[in-house]
Length: 127
Image 1 (cartoon, helix red, strand yellow):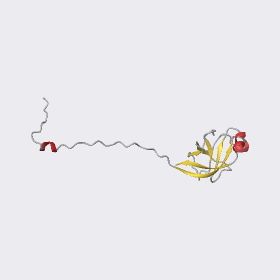
Image 2: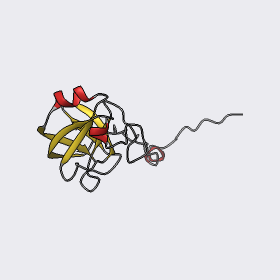
Image 3: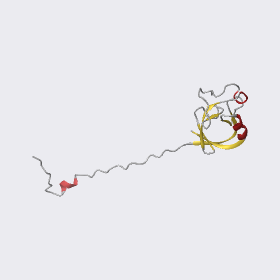
Image 4: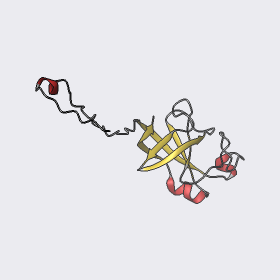
C-alpha cells in the first residue's frame, strides 16, 4: 500500500526545501593568437626553389599548395596554424633562406612563385 504524507501542522511543511536547478553555461571556445609582421615569399618544388628536396618538407610531410608554409621554427613552431589574408596554412617546412620573421608560401609551380613576389604583411599565429 502507498502512503501519502499529509502534514497535520503547518510547521511540518517548513522542513521541505526546494531544490534549485543549476544553470548550464554555454562554453565559448576562444581562439588565441599573436599577430606578427612578416616578410612573405614563395617557393615551389623546383631545384632553384627547393634545393633538390622537391615536395619533401623538413617535418616529413609532402608540401601541398594552400596548406604548407616554410618558417623559422624558433619564431613559429612546426605544426602552428598561420592565417595569411584570411587563409590558414600549416608551418611544415623550413628553408635555407627562411629565418626570423620570414614565411615562404608553397606553390606547385615556379610561375606562381614569381607572381607572388615579396610582400610584407601582418599574419596571425594561432597559439
